[in-house]
Length: 128
Image (cartoon, rainbow, N blue to C red):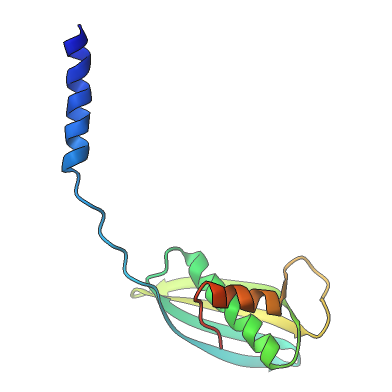
C-alpha cells in the first residue's frame, strides 16, 4: 500500500521538474504624456505605454503626470475626476482629468502632489 501512495507523489515531482521556466515579461515602456489645460484649474493628461503589468500601471502613470504638473504650476494638490484606460494595437493609453489647487480640495479622490511625485520617483515612473 505504501508503494501505491508513493507513485503519484513521484509523478507529481517529475512533472514539476519538467515544467518549462516562465518567459520573462517585457519591460514597461513609458511613451509620453500630453498635457492640456482645459479651463482654469481643469487639466487633462493623456499618457501612453507598452507592456504594463496591469491597466493600473497606466493609471499610475497618468497620476504621476498630474502630480508633477501640479507642482510645476505651483500648486500642492489635485482632485481626480476621471480616468479612462484603453488599449489599441498593444499600446495602452489613459485619458485622465484632474483639477489642481493650492489647498486640499473637497472630495475623496484627492492627491497630495509632493507625496505622489516622491512615490513615482521611488518607483521609477516618469513624470511630465
